[in-house]
Image 1 (cartoon, rainbow, N blue to C red):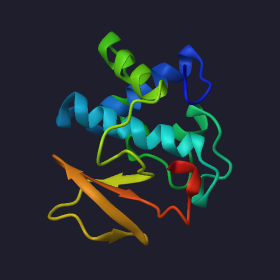
Image 2 (cartoon, rainbow, N blue to C red):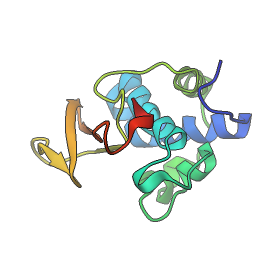
Image 3 (tube, rainbow, N blue to C red):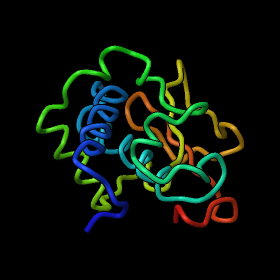
Image 4 (cartoon, rainbow, N blue to C red):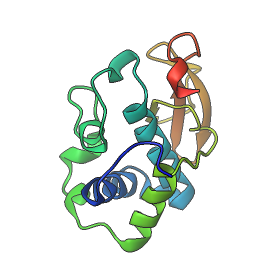
Length: 140
């Protein structure tokens, strides 16, 4: 069962986002990016109080994903990308992105905090950041 309602068009959007943001980090990196996106669509806190769908999450502005501004994002998703997107839509979570609402790719080490959110770990090139339970209980 899905953790958030979605259409097949939104599966494709999420699959494209996951690939465009993290294909270089392999399937696990893509799944972690997917976790972050799904978390944004399912919580009601911080910068995400008006985000309720995958489409709204993918194209959130300001504060959305850089990949949506690049041509690679607009390529058709592969079937494997869709399968990965479905896994996170069904609720599979992967540490350190389990409760993350943000990630980014720094030039060096991950900072302990980013926009007042704590670093929960790094996977390959991406650092993941999660709010506290007090700031966003929905993500836990």
